[in-house]
Image (cartoon, rainbow, N blue to C red; front, top):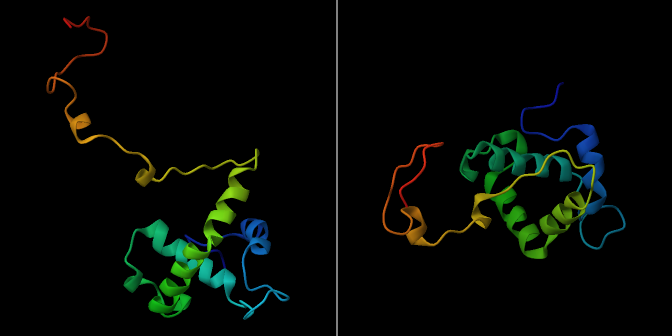
Length: 124
């Protein structure tokens, strides 16, 4: 069976699997389905769909969402992102628009909107 559109390939999984909770030897339950769970989270985040629309192959949407939220609060995702972003050979960087802020007046700019063509000297 081939890799599904939003799922991690083998090399990507190998990079993060050791960073996730639920490994044998970790306190608490063993996460035998960590890869399936992460792929479910990626499906929701990459597709832009609601959690309720999560395909059944990933499990019950409410269970996946609850675990996703627990990992958020525990800092699991942040630790994974810190390790991946520190890799100088990282070929892909994503910027989430929630970290980019603009003041409400930045929409129209100071003095209102002005249309100016590129290469044409402005009369500022």
